[in-house]
Amino acid sequence: MRPSAAPSRSFLCVRHGVTDWNRQGRFQGLTDIPLNDEGITQAQAAARRLRDIRFDYVVSSPLIRAVKTAEIIAAGSGKPVAIDADLIECDFGSFEGRPISEVMDEHGITAVEALATILPEDGEPWPSVSRRSLRCVGQWLDRYPQAAMLFVCHDAIMQSMSEALCKKWFNNRHGTPFRFAQAGEAWTLEEI
Image (cartoon, rainbow, N blue to C red; front, top):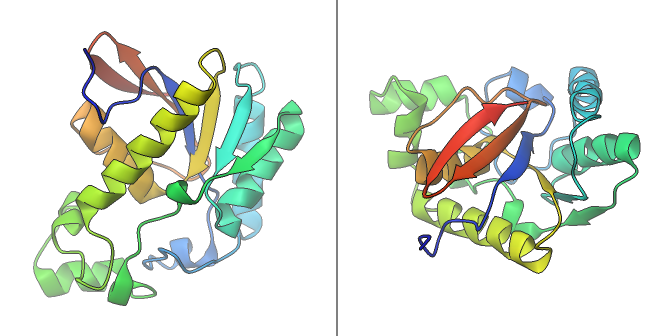
């Protein structure tokens, strides 16, 4: 029997293409920053990588960087795009817009995974990010039990799901598709 927080089956996920704030190493969170030219190129590359991979629906975060990435991928596949607010990035509160390296230095941390332990009180708690993202993915998979699903979202969303399902963080590059693959009770993360 699967844990209640775990999705019922495997699914695809891709982090949006890069933005100027990503390149500047800033916490972006709910700030609605568009893709830059490099990000558009990354979304186009993701569409090419996914060309021969079956997916029936594309579900995106409502933030413009994810929506544009989803639209580019969907245009190449002819699949519909749905928007789900539960895929939105973590609310980093007072960290939004600040350089990530500066915050890490202030708190004496060297691993990005440790950021989850120092999120500000005016932001979203890390366990909440994991709960809502897994619930969201699970609801879509349950709603369309025969469909292959592609979720276009954000680093914190994907890291929180990987931490919960695969027990690890991973190198989540912009515009790189991954498969969260279920084998019995175990989950793995595979780059596509």
